[in-house]
Image 1: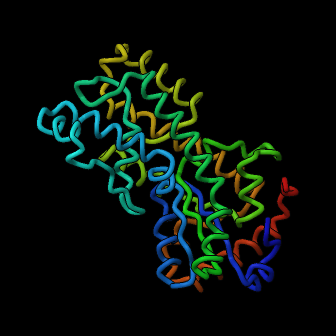
Image 2: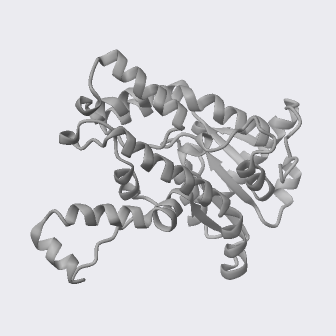
Amino acid sequence: MIHANAAQWRAAPEKRVLLFGMSGLGKTHLANLLRDGGDWFHYSVDYRIGTRYMGEHIADNFKREAMKVPLLRELLMTDSVHIGSNITFDNLAPLSTYLGKPGDPARGGLPFAHYMQRQEQHRQAEIAALLDTGHFARRAREIYGYANFVCDSGGSICEVVDPDDPADPVLSALSQEMLMIWIEGSEAHATELLRRFDRAPKPMYYQPAFLQAAWADYLATTGLAEDAVDPDAFVRWTYARALAHRQPRYAAMAANWGLKVRAEDVARLRGPADFVDLVAAALDARGLSAPPAPHI
């Protein structure tokens, strides 16, 4: 890790962190808190994915739908209208809508093969956006004068890295630039995340092998044909499995490449100074627990 103990962390003139964990546990809330404190640059991996790396895919999808409407088709063909996504740090709906859900096309579902193509596009985009983190940290300092930097990673970071591989290229690059911090949720948090997702199921990125196994199991369990699957029912069913699948991967990332803080402690933070104290305490706790030697 770039900071071996609390003293080094507190004394560092430039603090650079990457937050990871399940969506809904406070990554973006904390990043906004630090940014609003005035001396932290906020880099959102999901925003970078949706603008730099998948923006064209998203806009083209909107255009394909617009071309089905005669009036819009005529306007598009004459360059009379512009169609694009209005993605923001706090509204990533264009990205998740593009990812979509597999199943019955009458209910908004995609053919599974097409859905997997979009998943692969996201995988490549997420890796590229993660590898851009160091560049943005340097850019934030050199252009804008920000000494401190927070990377707000997507919940699927654990799906595009191998936390047990000491040579993982993404984690190796990130750990040389950032202090990697897992926001760990409790059982109560998991229950609440499931409740929220059940109310408003949304598209997500999943590791290909996990997703293919989940799709095969769902079809076998329900006896449904691919084009008869309720897309929302499938992603609800898959999300519960994803929570269990991701937890040990996050834990391995924290054990081998960084440290962890509790989501309930993050929720109590009121400003950057509180965050510095929380990370210092986590570094002290990691030192006392004598973790395995880091992979870097």
